[in-house]
Amino acid sequence: MAIQQGATDAFATGLMNGVYNFTTDSFKIALYTGSASLGPDTAIYTSANEVVATGYTAGGIALTVSVAPTSANNTAYISFTNVTWNAALTASGALIYKSGGTNPTVCVLDFGSAKTSTTTFTIQFPTANSSDAIIRIT
Image 1 (cartoon, rainbow, N blue to C red):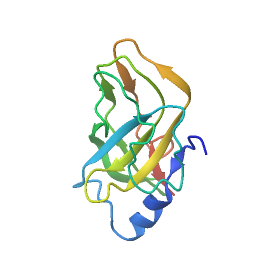
Image 2 (image 1 turned 180 degrees about the vertical axis):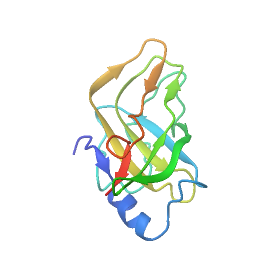
Image 3 (image 1 turned 90 degrees about the vertical axis):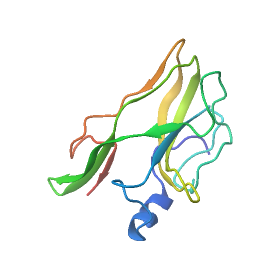
Image 4 (image 1 turned 135 degrees about the vertical axis):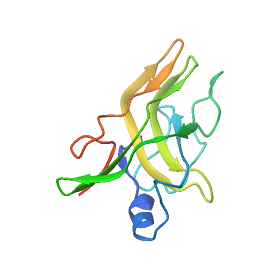
């Protein structure tokens, strides 16, 4: 399996079981090489094929919820503040996960190809609304 974008099965069942609270829990985002095997069945954070680079720390960096859980047009959504690594690195995807406990996953991001930076690497999240937010539930 390559990198398959989307919410993870752990996230879907975790929502039903009260595992995630986007107002009080901490979340992180980790970067991965094209050799990573990430997808719907990725249940917990993994360091396998995570990016290794000066200026990048295993486990990724903390995310800040920029739009708390909200709803409009019969869709609940949240978003995060853009994140930046001050590092020269190459990544093909990312994993968002809850930091703490077993580190359960939220979703996998596939960049479509290897993206390379020479000084800073930024992930820009889409507009936080019911049509575009990174996490939407209808």
